[in-house]
Length: 168
Image 1 (cartoon, one colour):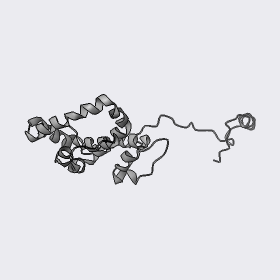
Image 2 (tube, rainbow, N blue to C red; image 1 turned 90 degrees about the horizontal axis):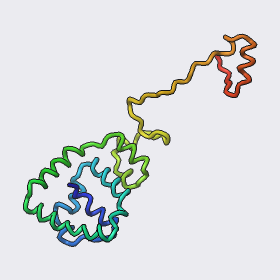
Image 3 (cartoon, helix red, strand yellow; image 1 turned 90 degrees about the vertical axis):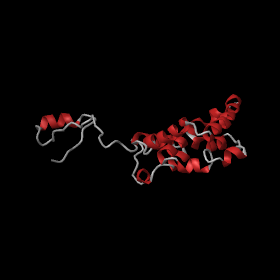
Image 4 (cartoon, rainbow, N blue to C red; image 1 turned 45 degrees about the vertical axis):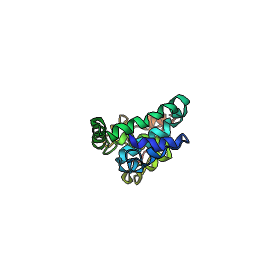
């Protein structure tokens, strides 16, 4: 489903693909270049988080199935074309919550894959890229000014630790 993952994954695992895999159009450099930018972000995020899991010997030996995938691609099986269509359809643009997750993850490859409209925005550390329809549940209560209260009440209020003088 995601041929653009293979070569970067092998790079993380310090493995080199054989010549058949590295020169094939399905897994070669064009696979990474031709995938949508949203998918590139997700691939970078996935590899940054899970590349160490792929270094297990049992998993590395499983990667020999790459040649079976190439046989299916060369045989033009319908599943390969269906997966390509789904990649182009589903990963056109990443939603804002994915961009927020990428920023918080601080995985440099994933952050570098963010689109320019996200990277040019100012980012607050406590809430990067807040949604446009954010609902603020806390509303600061309105305080009475000391002038509107009597002098005795103003004196007692000034003894409270959260007292602030508000100018009307």
